[in-house]
Length: 177
Image (cartoon, rainbow, N blue to C red):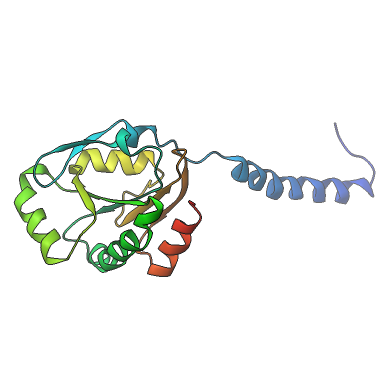
């Protein structure tokens, strides 16, 4: 179809430009958050090499934080994560740290956790498996720290790449209840 009317031509151009802006916005807002199925399908080991099927955490509000010993922003978040676990444990919140490191570093990870008062549950994810899981949960850059907030129904409510303040974490956790 061609437009021969000089009055309609600018109007059609405006409508086309508006569609280029509005349609992607509408499609982005309708996008579903990533599935948490890959997370709940895993079984990871803790510092004592005890396996924990993550499926056993389904039905509880979760904060899952991916971290590594060499990550300075990860270290900065640890006190906030510990405080959050303590503040909201009575409401059922489970804070889980997943170390993006290999199991052969278990002793060094345990020493790091003790030195940094990581009094919340942490597991060893392995580098490649953790990166795959972070990507599945929406972290396409595979950066650290990466934190996801999952509600009691197992739905991803929020994900954040980069360090979070205690206030940001607290607000995201409150939204889970």
